[in-house]
Image 1 (cartoon, helix red, strand yellow):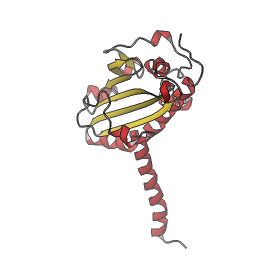
Image 2: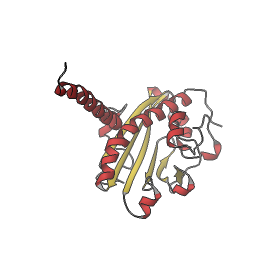
Image 3: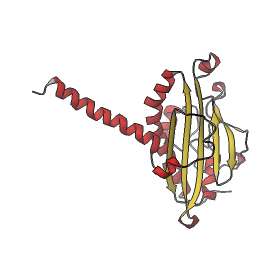
Length: 222
């Protein structure tokens, strides 16, 4: 009969390994060591971040074909191209992610706000930098419950930077995106490490797969 110690080890060791793997994937999925070291637009905005995650994928289309999909992201816009079950679980009030390019969402300028929740949440991204078919930099301090922000119970400042680089003679694109976050107090930082980082692996891979499916079809650009 196995001893209690052996049973505990049989549970703890794979669980610990699984958590470590999710932490690693949540910070690095798809990206190379060189890409993780490279500077992206907006790295200077969040000073001394507690969390940095860099994800990447090669998409089968030129940057000019990917850009219209990227520029229309957001709540009640193009969505985030994640699987519908993710949308329904995390964004139940949102529409399904767009399956075509919407002309009405193609104009994006510095200072614009991209909503990421219902109006009453007052949650969204501010566009810090935008250069067509090259890079997009989003910033937010609003991705916490409104009541927490109003009572100053917690703080979150983060950026989301997307860089598109043509590869394969311009026939494909290396899409690298990074988020950098500074959080307070300690319990929010701990929760972000334990839950948000692993969840970001699921979200980022879902988003990249969704983009790959869309840009792999004949162009929908109007």
